[in-house]
Image (cartoon, rainbow, N blue to C red):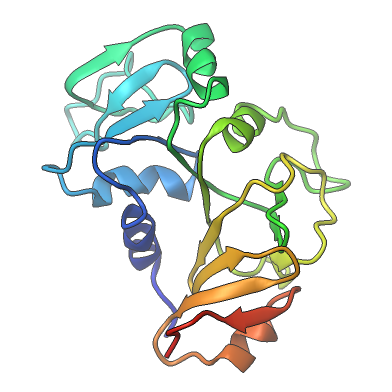
Length: 214
């Protein structure tokens, strides 16, 4: 079996280090907040103006005035601060976000990220993804390995409109953990029971086993 969504989220949570500022993208990445050790000192940042975002509230304790960038109700950790979007994006563009965990439509072997528009699809705003991808010190993508139509999301090269070029460091899917290395992806880990040849058939770029991969 492949990793479940919860297992993928936990793998992404393992990428977070203590005393860092982390932004969680809209969609699956937002669930990472619930997978964090509540005792670990980390500052979750939301581009709509929160530093110190906590996990999702329990039912009945939601505050409609307190939301993340995806308009979901959230909680605040002790010591959290609130500010306007201009200050938030100054923080992002100034390189003060240590890690951004984002979703993706496609990720290139060279680290290119496309996560805002499918060609020919409905035109939506790019939002804060471009700023986060370019401004964060490290970018991890959390996504399904293939699209709903079966097309690979790990590709060489990206064919969808770019969000940012050469920014993705690591990709986590239900099949494993992959690092972008320019001309292919290094396979850091594979879900139990799945081999390299099987996952290669689902990938639109060359896969190479990392040192120590069993």
